[in-house]
Amino acid sequence: MKSFFVSLLLILCSPVLLMAQTEELGSQLRQIINGQQATVGVAVIFKGSELITVNNQYHYPMLSTAKFHLALAVLDYINRKGESLETTIHIGKNELKDNTYSPMRDANPSGNFTISIGDLLKYTLIQSDNVASDVLLSHIGGPKAVNQYIHKLGIKDVSITASEAEMHQTIDNQYLNWTTPSAAALAIETFLQNNLYPKEQKFFLQHAMTECATGENKLKAGLPKKNVLLAHKTGSSDRNEFGIKIGDNDMGFVVFPNGQYYTIAVFIMNSRESDKTNAQLIEAISRAVYLYFKENILTKTTD
Image (cartoon, rainbow, N blue to C red; front, side, top):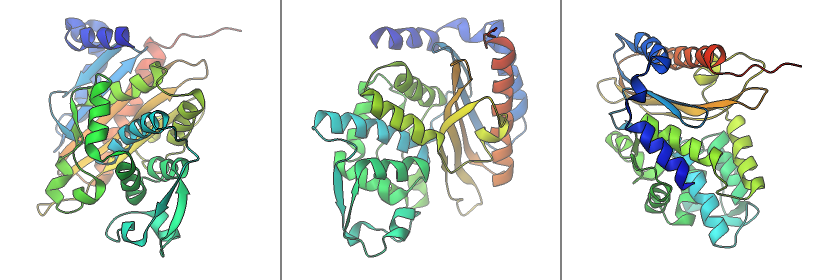
């Protein structure tokens, strides 16, 4: 794992980002986002090591993409504490906050029920359930525990300091959890490239990401309906009093039938554009990256 981090750090600090091989795609991406009333950041990792970024210097609000980082910390916690995905947690009525999105709460309005950590992760990753997310967050020690674990993995350009409940206290709190696009892509790549957890847990998390029920009009919309698999996590904010959307995000990895894949993170910050335009931007970026990978990097297999 150490050598992987070292190689990526060299890439992050290297002029290779300006090489012609990736500058073509970078130019395409800059053309897509040019003129938009928003700050758009993109990071793509090809073949586990070749990184290209656009507008990577900013701190983008993570919103619900932080639930992926939470999931990593949960898996680490249960393995250290002798728990499992089958371990159950009791949910009290007082934990079912009513001012936030939660299919789990809606299915159990009276509270006082038990649910497995695995099912909480499904609610968190597939349906982006805010209450399920905060239950898991509390179970493993709060935002600080997640932040420390992600930093321990060598991913530094990320800060996780707030729960979903805290982010819903004021709209400005939605800026509290932040990342750079490259750090977001690196978090996914670290999960994929290293044996951090038992195989069945790694597969569980990958499968949950493929079942993500949000963002059908974002990264997924830019991909063909057949011959690729997308595993991803989205994030979306409210709009402030000036009509500015704090964040609109999608990050994940795309797998081809021969097993080759790339990792992609797209973050939109402080957008005056409509939700539809934001989604179309992410869709266009996704399509451009897919076509570039298919035409320039994908190794064709022959029968």
